[in-house]
Length: 312
Figure 1 (tube, rainbow, N blue to C red):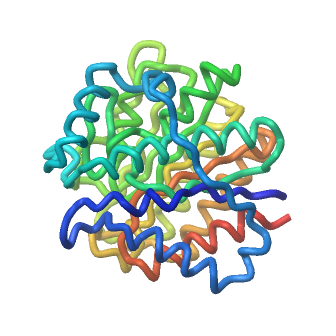
Figure 2: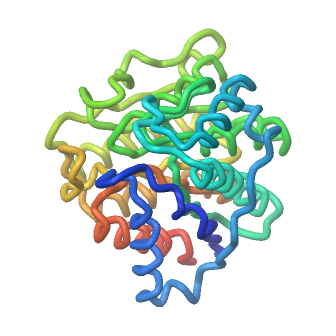
């Protein structure tokens, strides 16, 4: 097994404002945990490169990109993103998207078995035409579009275990039968989407699977969703590549949510994703950091994830 770790120091330079939960210290906490772990000897560290506008245009509308560039240059508060933005935000966002492309390229070439992208701003709320919920560009969607349009693949799974529903990712691929989007999330909170009856439209009908969780749900419920709902669906879909939007804000100790997932629960569903990738996609798996705002939990859970990905 060879596991890549993609990041860039400039991803810490995006500062969304005082006391904002999506703060630069999130990446510092991951780095600190890795420095204290023998895992650092098993991980291949790679520096992210910026995505190109062509990469972004596979997902995002041209007018939206121009709007984002102007807003970031003016250093202002971006209401739909719920964060302050500046020139550092824009560069960090291009690097976050570029990390995903570099990771899937390395896995497709066989240079790596799998990879983790420790990047920010996160991405899964960003739609084709709007930044939302701490997210500027949709990093996982950009990677999926690259795999479909440049790498010659036909079927990509995106699994999202963040506390919040990845409305942007769902919206981008809602009418596609080439991307299967699966999400577990706390029901009734931001952004208000992700009901079980949202299953896709047109050719994409049946290729979106939402499993809303109720307040207080924890390991049993989230593990059941992956084992009893996602696994059978993947027997039919047979993905050629697996992407994960990994938020750790569903943890029992996270300040933003009301779910009760533990470290062990996250490790179980991460194992499920690795097994799905091995069974259907030649092991090809790339994981993207989304939410997770308890710094101790984030560091521990990322180390657990990397341990699982890099174990033979």
